[in-house]
Amino acid sequence: MSLEQTLRWFGPKDPVKLQEIKQTGATGIVTALHHIPIGEIWTVNEIMKRKQLIESEGLSWSVAESVPVHENIKKREKNYRQHIENYKESIRNLGKCGIDTICYNFMPVTDWARTDLKVLFKDGSITTKFEAKAFAAFDLFILKRKNSESSYNSSQISAAESYYKNLDDIVKQKLIQTILLGLPGSLEAYSLEEFKSALSEYDSISEQDLCENLYSFIREIIPAAEEAGVLMGIHADDPPWSLFGLPRIVSNKKDLEQIINVVDSPSNGITFCTGSFGAGYKNDLVDMAKSFAKRINFIHLRNVSRNAEGDFLEENHLEGDVDMYSIMKEFIFEQKRRIDKGEKNSRMPMRPDHGHLMIPDQNKEGIYPGYSLFGRMRGLSELRGLELGVRASLGL
Image 1 (cartoon, rainbow, N blue to C red):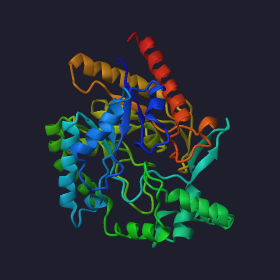
Image 2: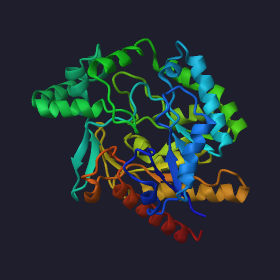
Image 3: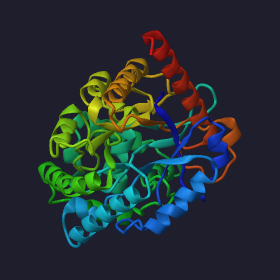
């Protein structure tokens, strides 16, 4: 048995087709009902329509990524209780339809953040990066967020100011569009004023407040997940540090320890993302994979090169600063343990998280950054080969 090989698909409007995904060797689909507004219930009817579409191509719906958490839940304000009840009903409905794994995140306002989505890689493909001084320049001098200076030290402010002064209007607009890009599955973006307004709603919410709001959410949804036979996997913050003065509370080993201890249940688990955690210079991913192996319900495999200043570049899957060999070995050991124990969660779905935009995809319209076909197919092939090699070296 191997880790279940999956690929993310954004639904019928995705320019990457299910037939193409099938030819990559993936057997599982990771998808979401992006057409349903955040906070509304995923009905059995809508779930089954998507499931049947996937199964008609000989594939299976492996993971729901993501069932988004409404901002009112994160802030615990207004109609947040109704949104929690809706969320629990979506979990139950997914379970009824045989979808047993859900990925979610608790990042306030923003999802993943980058400062350049069109970086020319050494082989001519296109990748993404995060540059700390570019991000600070946006925050300080373009967005002009209130009290933004408190988020940076003097050297960071100086570097950001120098960077900003050298921006022409075209590059400045590109930076704005990149940082304000919408959630995966949507190419819609905030305006500057909308974004500033959304940030201001967290002015009175501290890191501890957000932690307590997450823990309360977990206590409410995990019983529903257990009842439905569903495994939840919280995704890391991307990148794993505070942005725009907002708390980021799923960023390191300590955060994960606190989260899994909220409710001691296999359903209260982790989406282990090597790219997101890997961007954190101090995170020891091999140690984290070993420490939390029993609670890893979904796996994202991606590599980055990074530095202590907070810059990182998305690399090829087997290159960069993430020790993919050792991490893969921990997952293989854990899957063997689950099989030997007769545990039901031995499937261990994994997907190549992002991929470079390669020549055959560069003229296609509507491809969300990181989600081209050929780049992810290369990543999946490399990871498949790595897994086979590790298993052979271990005699498994």
